[in-house]
Amino acid sequence: MGLTNAVQSLSLQLELRRTAETVHLVNLVEYGEKPTAGCIPYRCRIVLRASPAIIFTARRVTATIVAQATQRGDQTLGSDTIHVGRVRSDVLAEQDSLDDIVSGLNDEQWYAPTPSKGWRVVEQIAHLAYFDDAAAVAITDPARFVELRGALQSALAGGDPEAADTLTLEPLRSLDPAGLLEAWRANRRLLADAAAGLADDDRIEWYGPSMGSKSFLTARLMEAWAHGQDVADAVGVDRAATDRLTHIARLGFITRGWSYAVRGLAVPADQVRVELVAPSGAHWRFGPEDAAQSIGGSAEDFCLVVTQRRHVDDTDLVVEGDAARDWMLQAQAFAGGPTEGPAAAGLPT
Image (cartoon, rainbow, N blue to C red; front, side):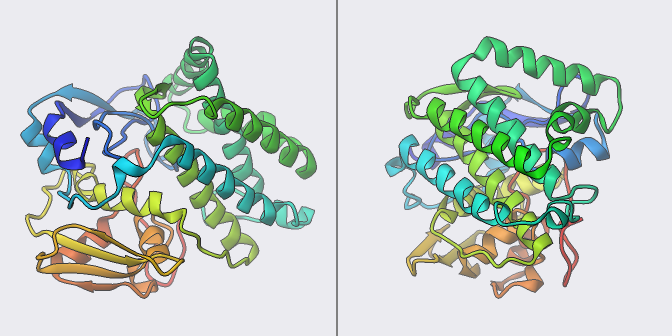
């Protein structure tokens, strides 16, 4: 099903409300699936520190309202040709890429602070290890995963902003670097084996309503890439960009509306054309060809901005039009409450 048809068939809107029952929800349109509320654990820690009582719940409303919160794109996104096996392969490759970086670090580098406030490299890898294991359990043993989810929800209900870190990180970050690396590798293998049996139309329980298999694995890929960027920044490593960014670029485009909705703002009516150059030299195009406003440049720069790893002014993106620039200043391609990206000439906090 194409993006436009999926949006038109949607009867869910994400509504912000306060509660102490769960962590963070929201998964917008990906890969032509029917949009549904789901969970992307990317940077959820920041949301929990800021306000552990914020979650997002799905409420039935009209498709028209939802469409207003979702940027309309053209039909050339290629979503129908991407299968879950392709996403799985890209997840594994992205994880291996980060492994190549951290496996060569010395102890001092493992304990170096990263751009995410309060987290060192060990916390970044511990976070990935925990949620890769949780993802494997969600696929292979949904009932057990529901128990794990309940434990996290109960921890958060106490209102302690450190509760999530204590539950998810403490057993792992207490390991020495070699032990932590092996734990992450073991959990990645569990996830890889579990994901090998997924079909395109499978749904997986997560921290909220279930997610489609491709969206579910895309969340793992974005986590590995974004947290990997934090690690690379911390230890001064330049990573080579790859065409695996296609998943994040697509997500970044279709979450334009979400970037405003999460802030309680109306999406500007102006359409924006996005034309990106992939690391391979391929061209990725999103949005109406006749849009008066546009964003152009490298796919890597675009992904860095929409994941709030860089300020748009610290990239080579060419942004034409007030609405296009405003989007790049608001961009948030991940779930949770509204968060601010880095200031110009700075890194995320």
